[in-house]
Image 1 (cartoon, rainbow, N blue to C red):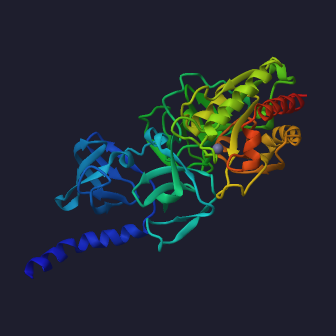
Image 2 (tube, protein in one colour; image 1 turned 180 degrees about the horizontal axis):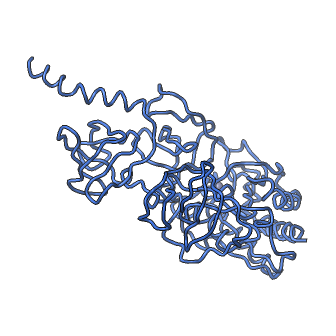
Image 3 (cartoon, rainbow, N blue to C red; image 1 turned 90 degrees about the horizontal axis):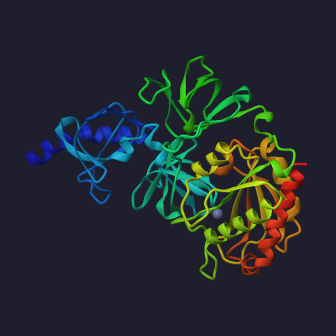
Length: 437
Ligand SMILES: [Zn+2]
């Protein structure tokens, strides 16, 4: 009996911490030094062993200092207050502006998926996400997945998320200089979670503040691969060019090409690699069709003299961030992402839809392409505004076309035919010809 009472007293503090944690909100965890970390916020689970299969022994919260004792299988063994020893996932700890760009991307499988504040269906509801939307996965357990939601973290049932091999970006690629004309740049928009505004244009520069996806700064100048920016509160610092997009006056994004033969077009075959996309009733996959259609479009488009670049030319995975960034890097005059729709139940949907995100930047391209696609054998659902990753984080005029429902018997008949594919290629080419007139 005495033992039990002692145990309760000892653990009272832990219980109190856990209660507090349930109320705390997410932000980041940053490396303080090589062998110690300070938790900046969030409920990071501490487990009795180095893996998700091990029991949860508690959580750590903002301000907690953890000494790293060992590292195993990407987990850190840490000493907690009270000399307790447990394991935390290093990918949560290493959530700095460098490694956060390697977060996995998932796709919401179910319409109006609920986002909860905690990994608990009785916790507060933060909102809902539409089917087929891409989400950044922060952390995953068997039943619950923590995702980035409106700049904070939320939890959705793991069963409602389809994991992909895509990551939310990559910080290691850009040795190509950013060739955007500086005179036109006006606004710098953050595209990666936990982006740091630093005092110097350097990864080790002191952090002034950490900002969320969507945060905007005024552009001041460029220093190597860094942008000098000003926040609305007047603070001035540097952000890495690979975690932001730059947008400016309409002339900054509007094509310089006045004829298709001068234009650079990026065609993005959706999905690829381990991310198969939607499945047809015949067990064929969206990723194969998007690639075949991209190649057909490239072939016809190149006959006009246009320079055509594919985001992938084989069955490999590409992060959504890399796809969108390729468009900026190549200063594409147009970016076209190809997809095929899928309805929750087979044979429940049909039609072609052209999506844009920013009407000013993308609207004309969407209209021009869709007016050609109206002649296709599969019915046309028109153009529509939608917040899709490859459009949202794309500095160039961009659209995403859903070329029919892959799990509809009627649509599939056309999707799987060469005639339809060649007609799509012809329509896209003509749509672009008109766009550049
Ligand atoms: Zn798709």
